[in-house]
Length: 87
Image 1: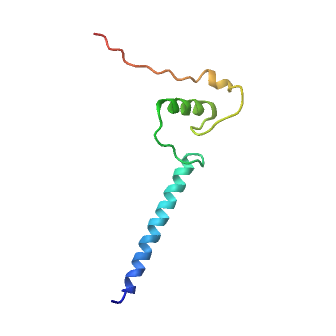
Image 2 (image 1 turned 135 degrees about the vertical axis):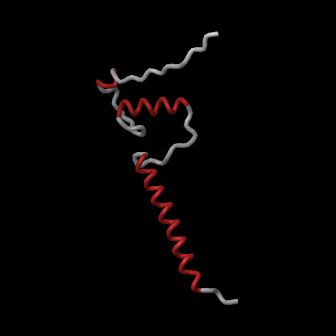
Image 3 (image 1 turned 60 degrees about the horizontal axis):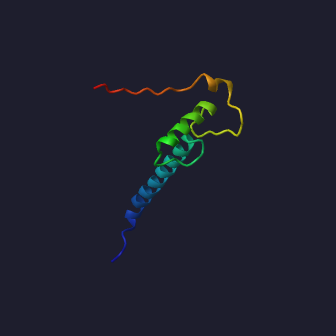
């Protein structure tokens, strides 16, 4: 049975477009994470550390090796409030 070569053009176009889309999505995802791979299954501790890193460096993925925090770190703290149930 002969191969319908006319069908290879749309097949090639579809394959190329899926490849281009996947590559562009991967590049966009890394660009939003400062060039690092995305994080999965983040727990509460990691969320707190990410927020701390954002307050220190201005970026969720940024980290510093300085031993002293910047001056603004002492005034931009975040306080969490929760509703207390009274019975």
